[in-house]
Image (cartoon, rainbow, N blue to C red; front, side, top):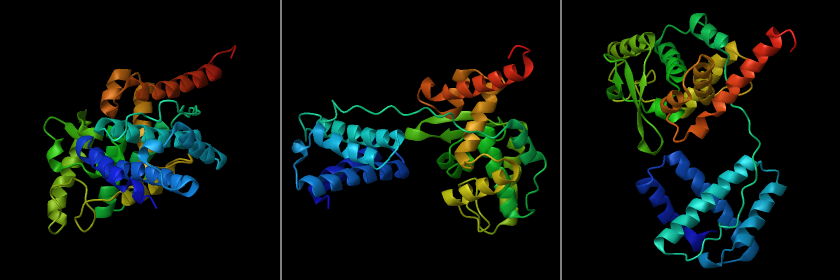
Length: 300
């Protein structure tokens, strides 16, 4: 239905892939947003040239999304997609005016990221029993790395053995936009990884030696597998609603902040491009302080 804009879509996707070096997941999200927008234009207004798309047409699409009860955060993501798309069209000379200049993003309500309590993560690694087979060893290491380093899911499954320096105790991570960062490994985690790499060669027949984490068949892990593992084990130790790999990233950052870590240091460990993205964990720390105050102060 969006044949009118196929050329611009393909060109924009190539730009995201080869120049911005975005992940396939991010490119797919941009693509889906744009297709939804162009399908709306086609249904409501017929075939339009790119130069005929006005801010009022864009606002009418966004208003429809709001009527469908789409949350502000999701609408803002679609606005961000359109801004990037039209900015690229200006850059290539396909457009002379940007219809997004007068489009205002709705205010999204700020939600503090959920996290697993420190006592619960302690229970997970001290008392939960993992199966004594390759799957069990891999499941335990998945959780140890997610909580011990704060890496994203995509970063976890793409860790190569060459990125692990067990001698210096460092993990080199390739994050968003191919930005590299180095995360220190605790001695226990460093030893676990070294043991895992050794056992992989002893226990498995022709395992993938390029990527660190592999399944029972010796193949690289996929995202759904990691999601299932995290949900399975977090269900044993916590009642929080969301049980995802990202919750362990939030827990890593929150526990660091709660224990006095420097905000800039946490920013570097997480691979955030701006301090604003990291400051949300300060709020979590403040909530903890309020709780302590209420429980301990006689006038609270």
